Length: 91
Image 1: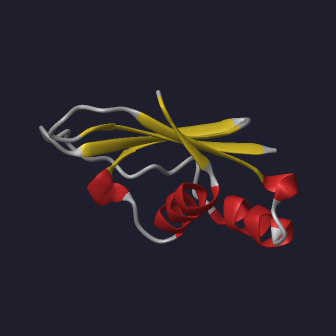
Image 2: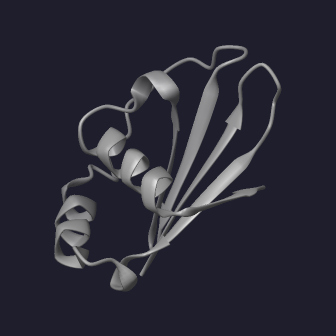
């Protein structure tokens, strides 16, 4: 299973992407538990704000798009983990 986080926006408007293959992680079981705890069908609503980051999180069959200020709880933990362990590339 792959988890991809794409970040766009900010002052420079750069888009970056990180990808993690869960099965390659030494703590894969923890990844699966975290992914299962994400409220994929209950993404919080928020108005877009200029010059702020937007995150697109993909973990098939799930995907969600959140503003930076919406990343809380398991959403934040998943994004942080993917950014820490994934390879960064320009999108």
